[in-house]
Image (cartoon, rainbow, N blue to C red; front, side, top):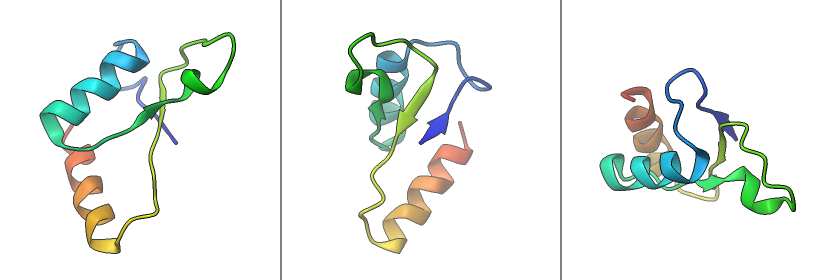
Length: 64
């Protein structure tokens, strides 16, 4: 999980959609897992990937 509060004020769903479209890194907005869906500017990533894929994703995220 990653807080993006220091890089954007976008709502979680918009941020997740944008980084997928612009940077090719998919994430899941954390509030979709909760009944009250409070936006804390946190997204979740899947780490069940090859190391090479994770390294490329990390490089892309560092450019945001």
